[in-house]
Image (tube, rainbow, N blue to C red):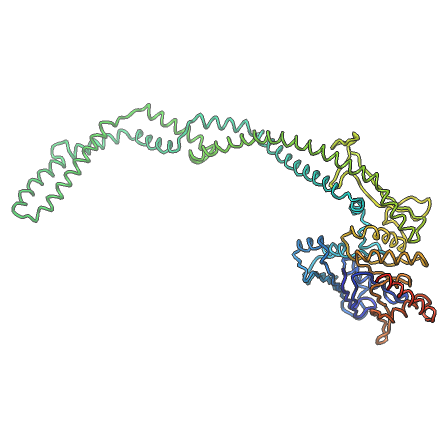
Length: 571
């Protein structure tokens, strides 16, 4: 709901603040006073294209600021949340400043936004009828929502949507699985060969290190045997060996220890050294007994290491890496087998869901076709009340036949989307014998506004837009039709905020808030002003609408009677 509009240096407006009621707001004033300028200013802040020529002469910039109450608009709050914009006290402020040389700057709650975002938010906040701007009903893709809401088919459509989205997600998963299967199938034979090659080698984790050590020993066997034998003989076996020398020295020291006991420590050290050398000699003796050079074993070890190194070149730097590679390929082959099973099951699920979707979408379409006359008849009746007796409203429903897709109960393949198989569009003929055309092709602003008013009076409670503005709605009407137009607006304003510009007293008398737009002179320049009228001022303004600039007692009495009548109806 629009709470306030602030305008600075826009066309004839120098500085203006206008409050609005949450129900029916009427703007009146002489021709040329600037009523349409207010709509242009509001359109600017709602994201329409800017024209620098609207900047007031002598000013560097113009600014329009609109305060909206969004407490009832859940859809808008969700979008604002996505944009990280938080309403303050359930209110948001749209502000747009226009400059001569640098375009415009756009803000929502003082956060800079693009013009595209500004227009997106503006389309949800306000419908302006009379110009082809901000009219959700002129966007044909919204018509199916209005039709289904009016016919109470939203739950059935939601069933279709859920099935459609389920199938879409499952098909996406199916596509991914089939790609994975195709990729794995290409490599399956190679993976099986690699697994067989690795398994055939019967590798153990530390085998390569043991083989490399054994290879070094075998390659140096002669040198090892010779050197160890020489060491053994020098330590223990040959005449004058280390053991023999140490035994002789120890005997001499032991004799001296009886003379000087302080030598006993050195004697003990010699005893320990002699024991260690005898142990080393024993170790060398055992080594020589078991050590032998075997050329066949060396050949086997070398070949085995060559085989392992070949596998390392193919599958990893270590035996552990090779075994991990083998296990991964086994896992992928198992995954392929499991994915094939899951894919077969998924394809069957999609077929079942597709059958359910076709049945649900076809049933929904048939009900739309069968019951669309309910809306057509109601709108036609509304149009007659609004002085458009020759108009015919039609709900056009079309299905698109395709060559590939889901078979439907009638045997035909139809293109299907989230909302079903129907493309719904509201059509209108305003003259007898003329074909029904799209709403946006209606030329007359007054006719278009009345068509919108007729639709809104029926569909207002089904719409997300809580503020509707009607300009030119009274073009070419009067008398009883004008009265009915006012009644329709009053009816719509019980569900939505309505703002209308009118020249008709029948409509003005029904306002919850009446604003008068005037053009005055200030410092030899024309400016547009606006004021909320008091009860007495309303009587005078409605009398002016009845009789013209020269107020008559009859017109004043008529005006008082009109307002009294409306007060009774409202109480």
